[in-house]
Length: 514
Image 1 (cartoon, rainbow, N blue to C red):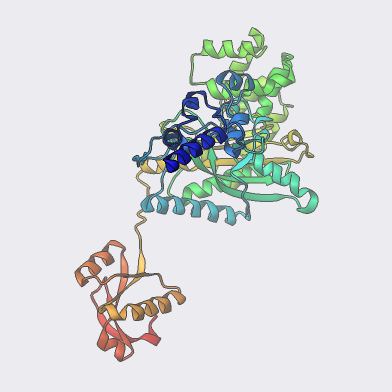
Image 2 (tube, rainbow, N blue to C red):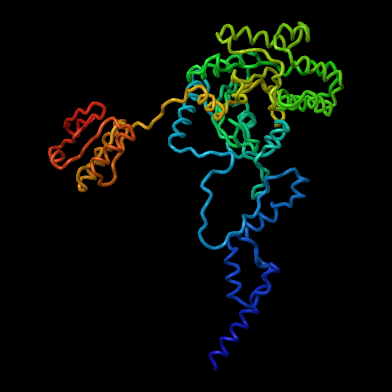
């Protein structure tokens, strides 16, 4: 009786000492610890603040970052942190596919990616460029200052735990600009840099368009002349030739942002509307009816006369007709004539053509712009670039003449498939090493080490397997030689070697193994 009374008193004191539960639906459990424990167990993964005095870091982050839909709409932010969904106890099967718009790279796909990147690197190095890289996660401000409205809408952005607005990079050029400003005068001009990096855009997916992709960029900083653009186009064409693409497969449309500037200036269109007009043209031309384009341009404060003139100029496909429209003194015309003249000297005239409708959607371009396209018209733009002389000042730096291009990995792979040019990239290993006795596994390991130190690739059989399995494995990995470590041979200081392509067999001293 005394024991029972003591336990009851203890339970009563424990209940009184228990702090109030801050979640109303759990208030009924205040005096029922066992029921409370069960309830908390079902939601413990949330790490939410259940008690009135809790200061859980995650709960603070959620309270400060997870805005209501209305608040998000007001701020224009759609990437704030949110609490994970509730999950019941027990193991649940995960979704085995990657998030929509992203990719896994199993070995066969990774070999193709490595081959593609190797060609990107080798071409860049042929042209004397140095490789750089930047964080995948950058300040959101880097991409919303001067990129253009489309990029703003496609950002993967959120507020981090330090209340900083950050974004997964949708492209590489703003990061390059940031690094150039950071380095300042410590690096001599011109800079010739290239990068291969992963980019993220939340956009509608089509063939060759994903929400993550890898992009090859080459940029020249410090050269004001169109010789820089001519060199960049030459580098892309060199890449195409290396992988089997010809001028019959791919071409380049070339124009200049200055063409549009000249037209808009004639009709007193405000300078601050220029970027918006470029985005409208790049996004809509050849994609929606002409009347809808006119409505979009009218919303950008263009008069009907200016719209008609602009659309006429954008339909021009030759420098001769452009000269008729703009006059012989137009700066854009001089740049374009020089570029086409250089193309003849480089030997790639058949690859390029003038097309005034090419403006590129990013707001920071200022001069020559170009994009690669497949001549059959089945795919979206393969690559694109141009001059961006005014970009650095938008980030608080001193402007430098600059131009560059971006080349995604997704569209070119689709083109290679279309043309039947995907290379055979099977796994190849120089040697497969196998012990014929479990006690000789250590000896096989030493043989593998000897070969690897001599630069040979080795697949070491790590378990005691029958020879039939070993030969199948050798065929699957395209091994050149089979090295067998047997008891008799090892006592003599030798191993057995079989050349798998010819069937030739012999013994060789371990110390002479090459």
